[in-house]
Image (cartoon, one colour):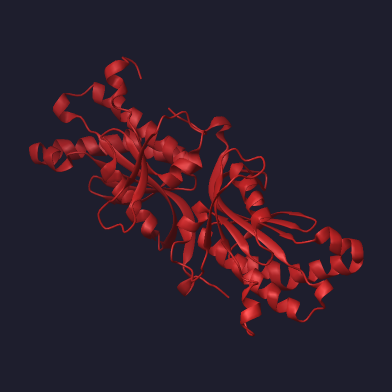
Length: 187
Length: 187
């Protein structure tokens, strides 16, 4: 009989990793102001949007967030809602106070252990995040497959990319949301 | 804001579809005996193995089973345990009383509705089942990706295949378990 080792609890999940672009620079120029702004974005936009899409915040690390969703479709819809909400909030702020997020999303058969999650799938989500455009998102081929035509989003196929500490190349897709504000006055 | 339509509940799941090879023929030659054998296999092997791997039987149709698992690794381990158990049980039976199962497994972002599940991912699992060798299994590329090196199984890459009623070709992998009994006296 084939069994999973050590009877670990496994679960398919969409894993979303997010962080703030230039967080160290922002903190360097205004530590308290940046922290207050981050907390306001979390409280007023990010956390409620995650809840509304059924996401669970698994870990926070300074400016970073790791979130799990039962559905890849819900995870991507949530990421787009956060990025669009952030663009809207930035309109009201001076340029040097604006926050932009990078977001990476992957689907993984992850290991659950004491409210934390582990596995290749989590590491890959974190790598995808570093490949995301500021204000956009970067998803794995598996996420692209799962969302199919279920969401009206125009992802760009960037093909296979080698990334740090991941043995196999990742086939990635990106979505730009920020670029649109230069062409369309209202989002 | 991008939302999923009609607020449907979505969930990533590994979907296992199974049926009995030549069930109509078996029923034609011995209706009552076949039904009793099927019920015994379910009660003594199939259902307990599904429970042990965290699977949930979503639907049964005569000789067919549709099962969901939270993890793709657990779903594949379960399928292998069932097929190996069935080979073992067949050893004690006359050749014309032997049961063989076909099993297909896919990962899908499925829609849950009143204890039933829907979506492309379910239809694809049913197609994969028809492509399975008797006594073996057939999995999608997505399942292969998720199990990685986590189970000691030698899948064969059959590349892309066109299947009935599915628009895009499916990249499939198969596992033969039955063949081994001709070479190895003990499983």
